Image (cartoon, rainbow, N blue to C red; front, side):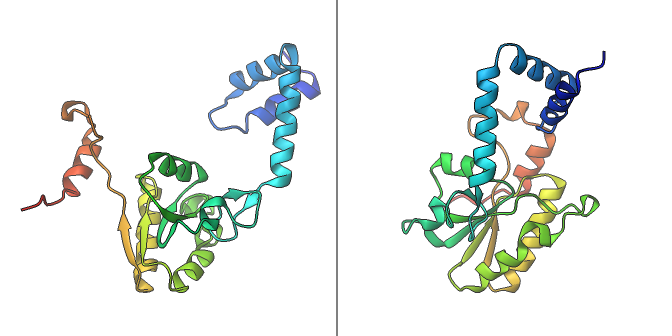
Length: 200
């Protein structure tokens, strides 16, 4: 069945969301038009407001409505520690853990030459400027444990060490409370390769 042009346009727009295929987009569109018109208006207003008012922090590239985000603006954060992540969602996850008090740099992606994503698209020039400022003593590479994430971490480690700054990588392996028999082989191999010495 052919949809009315406005409905087809809405369905197509909804498909830009991650994980939303044609059937899900159609279901969402029909819901918004049938029973959710007030919610649809709030959604449209919220999207418009965010697109108008939200930019990137001039220091770390995190989403913010001000020149600096709350983390970069806070004098309580340790400016000698810089955690490099792929996305704003990674910052939120680390902040929710409550175990990190340094600052961040958000790449907004990872190296992927096939997709045309190189160092320029990841803000590497801005990262280099931060590293050259003299405040950062350690860069914690917290990119995802994917092929692209590992390649990005390797590239950043070399760039960091070339500037005389210590580069470390977050640990990957067996989760707390996990049972070995249920852990996948790749995770176990990573955990064994990254094993640590215990106190004497």
